[in-house]
Image (tube, rainbow, N blue to C red):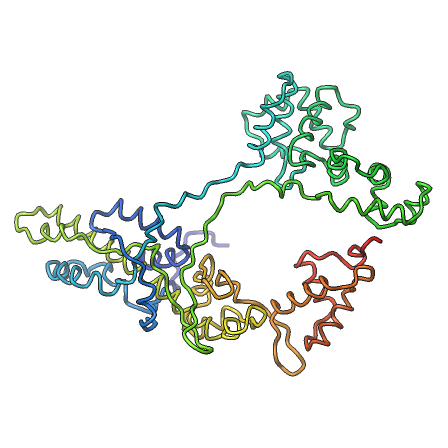
Length: 505
């Protein structure tokens, strides 16, 4: 066996993207807010790039034709400017003249900022769950030992508002000493169900009670039963029978075995149902009442406006993107015969970068506009008749229409929004699967979902529709859907099965 070093000859096909192409692709993925930040950063680092205070020219764009995108799939020559070996052959004086003369022409629409923008307050982030609970803890007068335990418990509260054991793999080294604390170790035993809370020491029990007295009610519970009990105890005149059912017959309650509960408590089924009905005021998701995520602004990139009977137009919105151009002051540096080579090289590099950046911004705009016009054509019934008329459509349908790769269409539709007569929609919402009917036509999943939602909303709560009954009702409306598909859509809508939707008398 020969294990020595050997030389082999082979062929391999690689496709390498230039830095300019990568920049264009990256910019295509940005939403409007991210693009604003990218423009601000580029202006700060490139003195040749400047931004103006443009006006809202949406009405002007009503008369403008849709421009073809230069593309990001490697099928154009829009970025040859930066290819090696070309820059030395460029007449930079002429380049500067052309750049300033044409700098506004192809990008004249990249302008506009809302004149009231400076008067609007900046979006603020709501307090996180942990911050809100710590603020409440400061109002409690307890010993340092109990405060320390409560602070640890607050760190164990998840986004849903329930307590969970600490993840040992995520503990930092500086928390190692904390884990050796006997109180904290006992807390972990309780959270891991190794020790009942009733058998824990007084400081640990008191810490749990302090946390569970915070707002919103139910916060700091270890399970759904405890969550309901915490809320029920805090409601004046809450049904004692309902509390008794939660305390001793919770498993039977989750299985809706009212007759068994009635027999165990020596009550009538009607009394049990009436008591259980009071549980409807309790929330199973206490954490949902706390907004612990940053407030995110949605800025539409375009708007669909009606121009006539059954006719619509895509109007790009540029008021949030500043108009970009080249700083004319730097023209003199290239024209000065006594300017150093170092200065001229610096200006050349920055000039290339500025022009490439402007092209990337314009390419993003034109590609989004191109894709949106294709969506408007494919989904005309949506804009003319309403969201229930959304047709099945996949990325490949639009990619074929605009002659772009599906990955490009995917980048365009993620995080980009359009203002329609029916509200603001993310572009990716216009894509949905469908169910093929016996006649070869397709029904969009969005329409099926809306129909299922309406059927359940209007059903007889004393005899809720089963998945098969929903499938039968859909078929009567011309939509043939299998029972298993109905079950999948029902779960997607977060609708409980029929036996759990049955109303109590």
